[in-house]
Every structure is written in C-alpha cells, then in structure tokens.
Length: 45
Image (cartoon, rainbow, N blue to C red):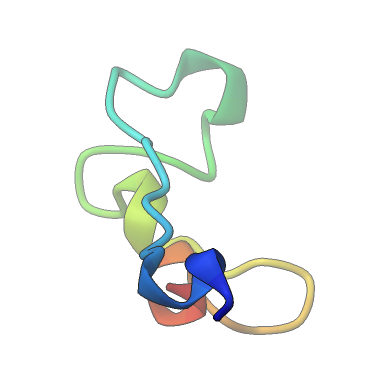
C-alpha cells in the first residue's frame, strides 16, 4: 500500500506579497495569480 495516496498538498501563500509586487496585490492575492503555465496556485492544488 502506498502511504502517499492520502496526502493533500497545501500551498502556503499568505502575507503582504512584497516580493511579488506589483503582480500580487490586494485585488489579486497570491493564490489567484497565474503562473507561467496559465494556472493559478489554487488551480494547481
């Protein structure tokens, strides 16, 4: 039995997002930002 089957990934993306500014801002929080492949961090989970 594979013990990894029950794992659920969680991307921690809180905080003010100063390193990602101006891409990450109040009206576009980090979980909703589009990555290079066009998907958001939320979609990837």
